[in-house]
Image (cartoon, rainbow, N blue to C red):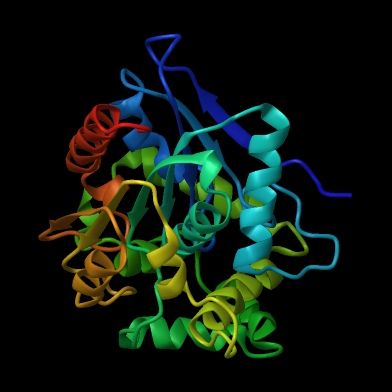
Length: 288
């Protein structure tokens, strides 16, 4: 039996507004979207989900994480709660999950927004080092290494990896994320899920012949799509933005200088402006 996903729901200002659904990246959680949701709540209802094994969602019973399974869990949640034609937003691994859902369940998705999606490409050196976490047993070594570093130092390392300018992190956000990291450190499956998430990305990059790659899925997506890339992203190569723009049938591209892997946290205002423009355009399009 599938387990329900943990969720944070923020109603919009208008009862008849559409619903935006947010999917976090590897090791993330619903709070990753808090800043963007504050900008968007006048326009849409906002539903942030914790993917299986992350945040406050239970791990899969067999401990296996794949993009297809993550997308299926999101689809079950939307089916169970009666959501249709949502504005689907994903970051990083959540971007791959959102892409899979848009390609395979188009009736669920009105628009698609991908923030630094980890589409198959030669990754930067930092991403290659993270991929080593997917090796058998590597997560246990990683856990031992983490235990030797203070929680503050762990957060410094994280922000240095995903932000172009870590000074943008304010004290309240840092305190919230520090509490969440301490909570997750007590969960027996946390490091295993991190390793499984890395493997899910690697599998998507090494898709066997005969299976639809993420790039093939991009060609299948019919929903109007917004692509957001930070020019200083240390995990997703900026050069992949042009290929992504060409891959989708109906794409818009927002590139942000001085921004890293989490544009929705670093510059939520710019992402919100582009998102609202996508919604306005989709309303003017027949069937949008």
